[in-house]
Amino acid sequence: MYFSRVRIRPAIFKSSQLGRVLEGNVYGIHRLLWDLFPDEKQRTFLYREEIAREQLGALPAVRGEPIYYLVSKTKPIETDDSLFNVDSKDYQPQLKTGQRFTFELRANPVVTRLGKKHDVVMDAQQQLLQLLVKELNLETELPAKQEKSAYKRLLLEKGGEAFSQRLTEILEINPLYAERLQQGGLLSDHLEWALKACVDRTLEHWFIKQGERLGFKPVADDNNLSKLQNSAYQWHSLSAKGGKGDKAGFSSVDFTGELQITDMEKFKEALFVGIGRSKAFGCGLLLVRRCG
Image 1 (cartoon, one colour):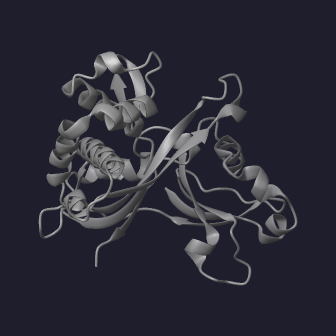
Image 2 (image 1 turned 90 degrees about the horizontal axis):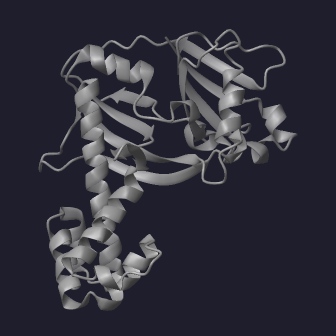
């Protein structure tokens, strides 16, 4: 296996509109990176996109262009007329059960309901809103078009004291949001916090399930609180792929924290094969660094 750092050649990026063309175009990036593996009929690499300045510091030739980290079965081929500069090295990490690593993961978490895949974040929010409406006997008040905004508006307008108390109960069991609750805030703030707490819990459950399958577990702090953090939820359109309409695409979430290996061989698979879905579009690459 190989680990590579791939950058668009500075001269090309500086003198062209390539940055604007690639911005948000995950399908186009996927195709360009695949050009580094001309002999491959099927994708055997994982990648993650970052911003060069954030990764390499304030160097004269470094701007806001993207930089890509790749894990691949074969070595990327950089030709004289290549769009990219490629730095590669052998990737054979020395692993053993019980080792701890800090990690970064950009993933596409989904949940299956009635045979259909759903975005975990959106699903968790919708499930909580539906539960609250049901608990408060407000189902008959819902409009015909039951979007998330309609649920929120109904709960805030007609939930009353019972709704406020229910949000308090949800937030008080979460140390992070219980502290926010003590600082006050509007009822609408409490609802947003409750939704975020629900999403945090659901994403943590998703990550734990991945670890059970792939030989690792998240590590808690000295107070037995999870070190797992999630951020940068984003929708990526794949309309450029053609034929699937404006709604074609996927979401991604960035996870960071600390993990411990529980099964060395399965964990190696997680490093080499990736985690979750949408691996062809920049998700699934687990980046790890030894603790301490």
